[in-house]
Length: 351
Image (cartoon, rainbow, N blue to C red; front, side, top):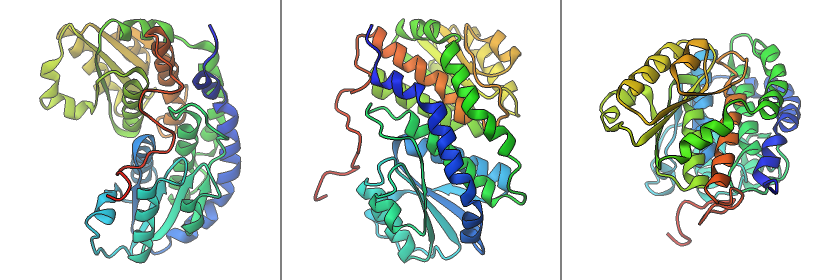
């Protein structure tokens, strides 16, 4: 079978991550200076970039002790709200740097007193040119429509950003240095990937769940299943899942659970796996986790041997591999999902 572009770009991620970390880690003093006197960080993004921003928000709060939040671009672009952002750093995240809504929101934020940081894969983009500081990822050209290497390099930028705001920058360095090798190992071994794709193909009803620092990874896995495999997928925090939606789980549902190997969320996700099995789910698939988590699911897709704080940089890779394998199994083209393009504009021209 001919190798897909998506598979090739997944395989390029170790080098892309290494290049991005090498380029962005030296910018920590500039990031720290930019944040001086600012009390909150707001992220502006859509799609996969929004999932990267969720990781950035959690890491900022847990690792750096800085309040973070996800801004709604429509507050700027449609409501034209007059907000005081003089105590905020606004981080705009866009692979292309040309999504009009994100560019416009960054300009609005600057006009309302925010300091601005752009995270983009194109240093010549409108977003990068207008920001106070641009974190330009080094993913290289990405041809497949589903974001893979551009997404993981955005996660690297989020880790650098959060660490620069921490009381003692540099405490993540040793673990970040291990990320490229862990990603390479996951790609080469593909433990559980094909079996997970087979189980997912058995029913169109899919539920994806995670929580905390890896929640953005769960949402990204759900997004990739939807856009690449044309499956209706619900991506939920396991806390939200237990507040009602879990009642829909039955023998038609496959559940994909995403967990780091350590941290405070593993036990809850392990119990959720047991609960879903008791409720008669068609299958439970675990991505990552520890030994107990692996024993609680029907199929275990091995994750990285990295601490929770940096695990998302590699944890999404087994999910990407599973999605690519599932798309091929379903007879779909993972490189060009139906109705999608590389640069998405939220609203029609003239709206």
